[in-house]
Image (tube, rainbow, N blue to C red):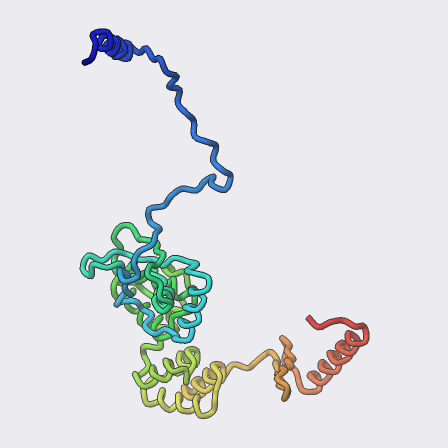
Length: 301
């Protein structure tokens, strides 16, 4: 049974507490000084891990094809070193999943590697379809992952969504206006020629020159000549100009390349127009210089 003395003692302590009297030293304890390596660092809500099954590709992603060998190599690297860079994702209420904005190749490789979770940067706030497309194009263009026709279709989508001109698309994506206009020109080609560009039978630069012809029939004939004669883009441009009845610009420079059986390529170039006697003189001069370096024990770079 609690004594009267004990009860009065507790009451006195509570009274002293109420008027600010402290029997204990309750000075605040300061936290230790942060390590220099932690200076400026802070936890970020937008970064973290999530189940890889909660992440899906964007069905509207402009890049549709992925090199399986490249994905396989990246998968082996992830198994060995882990995922070195997070992917960027956004939440979709319609799909009830996190949708990839950038990093689908890393996601594919991580799945192939059997990772249960994946590191992500979670995009906060809503993005319009146009903003998502812009980010995806920039991501892929900077890494040169989009094929020419994928780029062309993505540029066209941005123009349609925003009512933009070629120049406005170029400004938004920080690329040259000529890049946008030449890429869009590929969409003028008939589907069978687009397929040849997609397969790599015709380069995108040569395809642009072909697109400048007036009819699909003329374009098909020129494409056939490009493939049969293995014309490079400059030769294709000259062939197109001749087809349209325009004179080809005269070259004011000289460039000759000679490939040896061992795989070496020797190139002689000049900003002025030259002949083979001048090329021979240049090669003899270069040969004397090479022999001088050999005699003096100079190592090739």
